[in-house]
Image (cartoon, rainbow, N blue to C red; front, side):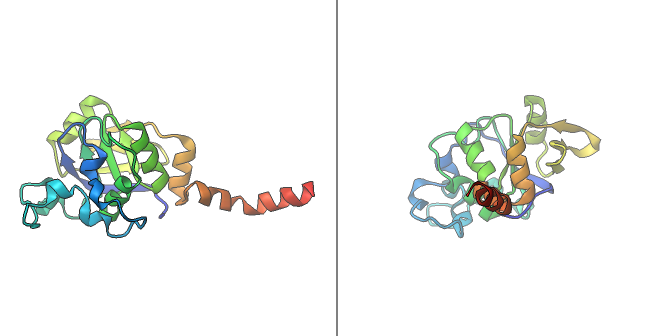
Length: 191
C-alpha cells in the first residue's frame, strides 16, 4: 500500500443507494486471490453491454470520469456479502476514496484494511456532492476533513489506528513489522 496523507481529485458520482458488493465486483470474478486486474471487472454488469462493449451511459465510462480518484456513492455503499475483492477492484481501477453517508460495516472494515479511504458525510453534504459531479475535493487524513469547493470543510470519522495505517501505507501485519525491533528487544529481555 502507498501511504496516503491527502487525496485531491475530481469526483465521479454513482447516484444510487444500496450499492452492494456483488454490483461492485460480481461473484463470477472472485476466483482470484490477486488484486491485479480486478479494476477491469469493477461494476461489470453496469459498465459493459451484453456484447462486452463499454456502456456509454454508465458514469465511470464517461470521459469526465477518467482520472477521478474519488467516487461518491449513495447511502449504504458496500452492503451485501463480505469480500475484500470489492475494495481491491476499486483500488485497481484507480479509486482511492469513496464518499457516502453510510457504509456497510464489513465493507468499511475491508476498505480500511486494504488502503481504500471510506469517507462518511452527513446527508446534506452527500446530496450536494451527488448533485455536483466532477467537483474537486480534498480528503485530508491528518485532520479527518473533506474540503469542498468554496472553502467549506466537513469532518469525517475514522478510527485512529486505521488512519495511522493508511498514512504509513501499511496493513495490520505491516504495522506489526514496524514494531519488529521492539518485539525482538522485548523477547530478548524476557529470555
